[in-house]
Length: 163
Image (cartoon, rainbow, N blue to C red; front, side, top):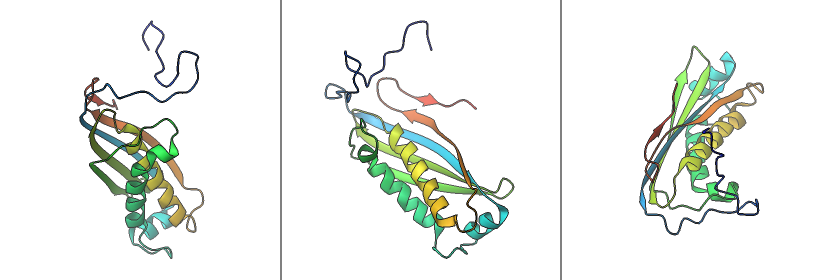
């Protein structure tokens, strides 16, 4: 943070929570990419990988849950703007050595505000869905590392996470 005090955009002059007025902002193409992972036991990992869980296709269901969550972000996070999303992609990568399922969500729109929260929500809900569907095999699974990787568009332009 700079020497100046950062201005919090979701607080009004009195310090009360307030939605940001984006009506004067220009519509631009917006994109955000987020990631996270769920670490599990070897038995749970094999069951997810080989689609051997009683609840069915874990990753297919989690992919749909992530897409649905991105579309409902404004219903979950009070000060988020409802957005017309152009595209939501939820992808999984299996890491046998780490016994982890990595989730990546990429969200796009054209509008006056970004889609970072939608990408983060998609990853979070997709991983929660993996947990729900695989908890019979491992209740000690850990969801970790949920973060924004990239964002493009808007006045602030492109941003990339380091490391």
